Amino acid sequence: MIFDADGTTIDAFHAVERSFQRHGMALGHLERFQKRRKLFKYLGGLREFPNNLRRQFGKQNRTRLLSTLTEFYRHEACLYPGIDSLLRTLLATPNVRVGVVTRNVTFEPQETLTCLFRRHGIDSREFDFFTCLPLREDKTLHFRRIREHFAINPARAYACGDEYSDYRAAIGAAMRPFVVAYGAEDRQRLTNVFSVPEECILSSPEEFCSCLLHTLNLPIPGTPEKG
Image (cartoon, rainbow, N blue to C red; front, side, top):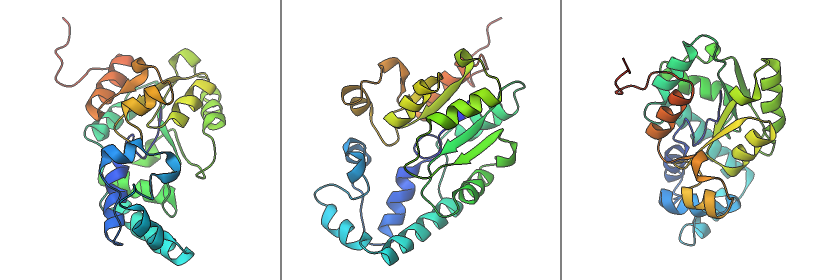
């Protein structure tokens, strides 16, 4: 099972939103953020664009913003509800290979995410793999290499993410995709713009956790076991 970090396991929107606020910028509401094209997501909508562009312009401004974001991730950012329990369950389950492949934007992203996971009781050293990629690097080859390294049957290989690129990478690596609609893209954009099948989309962290546990034939908290 390959996990994405930002927008899938980590509440990245509110981490970025709070970091922006500390520099006098705004992202707008999550619903508007999700509908923007990727190029403009972090520049804001028509209301926020002029001020955000002015404050992000220049190397020093961007460095200060990334420093704030890095500190927020390490000390304050949160996993979505239920994700910590899900990860602990998978890490404790024999014969399940689990790890992270992500394009996190903070400084020293692996150390940043290690700090975040540690605050939630997750030791990142227990992951079978933990890969942080450059922003523009495609995940497909990494997904395929991981699946082949562990000799996983493609029918039993899964990858999750919150963007169309994550869905495309999973398909390209002959893996089964999970796409969540509470991160960078909403359900309407995923289906109408990118033609992601409805059956692959999960609307909430709770739905994602339940669906993944059911897929792996693991107990779902709060659900009576069949006698």
